Amino acid sequence: MASVNLLDENLLLWNKFRNGDADAFGELMRAHYQDLFNYGTRFTKDTGLVRDCIQDLFLTLWLNRLTVSETSFIKYDLLRSLRHNLTRTISRSRRAVEPQFEYLFNSPPIGGSLIREEQLADLARKMRRSLAGLSRRQQEVIYLRFHMDAYAEDIAGIMSLSGQSVQNLLNDALRRLRKVRKFIFTNVNRRL
Amino acid sequence: MSIEDYSTLEDLAFSRSFRNWVLNPEGPEADFWTNWVAHNPEKGELVNQAKAAIAALELNLKPLPGRTIDTEVRKVVQKIKDGRVNAVREIPLRNSLLGRRPARTWTVAAIIAAVAILLILFRIFRQ
Image 1 (cartoon, one colour):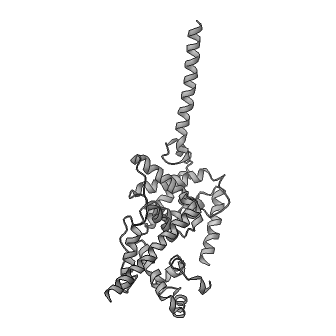
Image 2: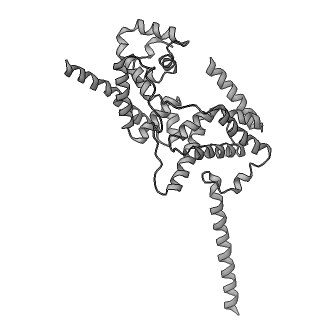
């Protein structure tokens, strides 16, 4: 229910924005800011750069308000534009170095309070290691799936990939996570 | 939401409701999930696996202070209200399609200059 109300509210804000309401536009920006910032800081530790890119993104959106679509499902469009702008800016400043997505950038592991059982905590640590070993693209695909609730089609749009290759990357990443459990069982068996 | 829907690791790990329960076992989803786990003992392993996957995928990011977001939003809204948004076009934007404008301007300038030089040369040549 809450998500339905949220959608209604976003649609209302979106229509006000299209009619030139700057305050409604600000609310729209506020609603998406945290997601955009979190995603952006997976590409660079330079938080100032991420903030600048988000600001440019919204100013450009405002300038294009007369030509934007009627839909309010703009989250993935915003993520896509931010990714495009940010990676372009980073690769220009570093010259020829491809900006890379890092799932675990700057992030300490989640506290032990989440999982009380030692065996599960161990499994989680192993999964995390396995996650860090995935390709950048796979890390990004699974990040968007898990943190942004994006489906393969949305992810394909954000990353400019085909839906099929996103599905393949996602399946492979999940297969690897599932395998971690098998290793644990093998270890337990060996110990017995 | 039918119980049969949850049969794979991703069904559970990507479910917002299940994740809410794992992250907050006393939360509003608790009744549904403790009940579901009790009625599906054969899925115990899957549940453990999904819990571990969530712990592995969850990021311990500090949310931005509301103040920081307020400041960023206010900057944009103020620029719009002051009518300073069009100024964005003048700043060589590093990263948007608008940023390509200067390149096109220079191309046009170069063509005009080339034509002018050709005309001058042509005149000199005729004399």
